[in-house]
Length: 496
Image (spheres, helix red, strand yellow):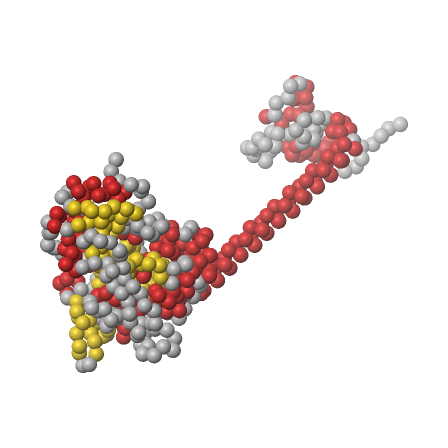
């Protein structure tokens, strides 16, 4: 019986189909040179017969794409087994679980990020300068270089008699994170400055014109760029002091000022609560007037800043959340944490300060603080260099053997009083008593105390001889029988 070739499938068509199949399946990774070229000849076969058949366009077997390179029958047998199906289902389940876990982790991270952002945003919202135009006058600090910040405080309690509109205390603060030092320049509220319109007005009046006007006026007056602004009031200060558990301040002169508050503060080193701190900030009936008031304000600002810097980053973050709204600043919570981290560990001796040199005068029935231009320029030159802002005054030297000294150890070093007494005696001083202080906590710096003004020069002679410490008028707060008392602080380093 004869068979006919099926019509429509000619030899030419068969050859063409075979060539297409060959090109599509064998060695397709080899690039073609033209449409007519096939690449089967480029693929190596171990059997010469298979090589010739592939070149002519015949393909017997197409191996499945498997790692084992098994034949079709082997592959079929393997995939038909129950174990293969079970393994496939297991892998599918594992992959599905992995995807679910990954999605859950992404969701948790996203939720945590949103939570942290919400928490920080809440703090920023409460401590931000809402409605302030300060940003137009602030100049960003250069990376790694010292910068200036302006602190403005309204010390009048809400509803108090005799309250004056606007801030009562100003301080231009130079912060050097690299050197871990802070310099506070007290600026009287009635200091005359020139506004952008060329009119001379007091700093308090400049503040009434807006934050930008205040910043520009003081930046022009000091000849520096101001990077940050911090504003607070009486209620905010009290909240901050309460939040840190009080501040330790050396009150150099007793405070008994009914206008400032109904709290009496004796002279001497003591821990102040919120009400005592506010009274010390407001008191002004001193013999040295504005100079003593400015010194007290710097002492409170420095002590409060050190308390805030003393805690870890997490503690400070919680504190900022607790006292949110006690002060307002452009820094934001991230900036505050970064600044605190850069200054953490700074001691009290690294906080220096002075008042703008000048004197109070009366003009048209109102008080005006007139600056001493030459002294002010010299002070800012020292401040810019990171030096002590107050000029050193020449104190008369006193014969070391002409007065008696008591040495008490206020440092954390055992035997410090005896060692310092030996040092003083070796330099001709007359030490009559040694011992420890009654205060458990160590003193940050060495104090040379005198109760009688006649021994102020003697106390300064001790400071000059030691090369550290500062003189303090005891005013009866410190108990000692000698002419001068030396309270050893942590700024003293024992000799080997």
